[in-house]
Every structure is written in structure tokens, then in C-alpha cells.
Length: 254
Ligand code: ZN
Image 1 (cartoon, rainbow, N blue to C red):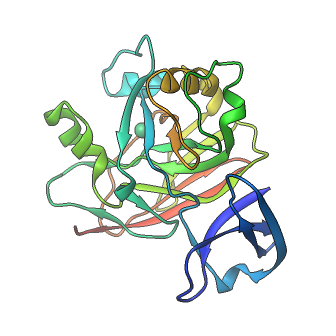
Image 2 (tube, rainbow, N blue to C red):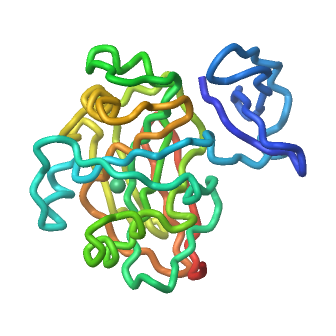
């Protein structure tokens, strides 16, 4: 099943489910009790929004060996986590703005876990119970500010630095999926999710030993090697086999 958040003209945003090229509304609470209404809204008549409204976005740094190496870093002994603010979220197709404070803004293609249930101190074995599904994310990063600041809040936290979508897929298997990033059609990142240092069960156990995960929260699971600069006028596409494609244009602005 694929869930979307969408808007028709000036209507309020709502959750829906996809059937071929049509959307059916979700009546009730996607994270609780709900009913799927008949899929009768053509996709072309709706604007897809980021498919969740997270209370927090937990990200994992250096979770692929080759990416840690390319930036001259060691692979961490335990997961390295940080947060992006919900204000950085944008929808598929929305513009990534390159702010004037940075001269080196880069893409990071990532598999994203969408949390379906509240959880704290969850074991690796039961971590799966917390997952609603998966989506595609781009952990846009001001690399120069990441280096100078030490703390990553600014480098990772600008408005528009968290595109994700286009939907939440509840059947996707994250064990060994190809993840790619293209800029203006040129391949920049290519890897398999099987190359993650810490798998999703380990990440959820580790994160929930620190903080409660809430329905709708996201976990960005780290980026593979090949991160590179984004420039005004670019289009950046993140694709995960079996999951879909996330595309965003890039412009200077703030
Ligand atoms: Zn990242």
C-alpha cells in the first residue's frame, strides 16, 4: 500500500492512498483507526505534499563506509544521530533554496523510515512493529558550515533542506535496494541499502534508548558515497528501486 498526503486546489491537506493513478481519501487517523474511501481522485488533479508531518526528523551520520571515507571520517562505533527541524521539510517537486551563508551545499540521497507507533526503549527484534513504511529523502547539507560549526544544526537545518516523498510505501523491503542520486540526469550516488553499517532495527533500538519516537516521525538512515555540490538551476533526483523517485529543483534564495 502507498499512502500520500495531498491537496486539491485550496482544500485542507489530507491523507490518501494510491491505486494506480487515482487517490482515495483516508477517513479517520492514518496512525490509528481509519477507513480507505474509494480511489476516485485523479493524481493529476492533486498536489502531492510531503507524506508525513513529523514531530522530529532523526538522521544518521556516516552509516555507509564509503561515504564516511570520502569525507575523511572514521565509521562510528555506535550510530551517530542528529536532528533536522520540521521547518526544513518540503514536498516533492518543491524548490530547494541555496542560502547565501553557504558556498557548498550538497545532496544526500537516503532511505527514510516513517514511524507508525509511539515507542521508547524498543528492542532490535521488535523495532519492526514501530514502522509504518518507507519513503525517499534528500538530507540537503551545507558542507562548509557543517565543518566550521561543529554542531550540525545550521548546516542541516535551513528551510527547504528536507525534501521527502512522494509517498509512504508499507510493503517495501529495505534489505537490499538500489539507491541512486542524479543531478541534471547525471549519476552521482549509487549504492545498495544493504551496505548500511547499522541496520534499521539497530537504529530504532538505539534512537528509542534516547528519545520517544512518535507516529509520523522520520529516520533518515544515512547517505552512501558520491555526495556533490548543488547549484542554481539544477534538478536533483533521488531514486530507490521498488520505492519511487523524489525530484526537486534547486535555486538560490532564502
Ligand atoms: Zn544524511
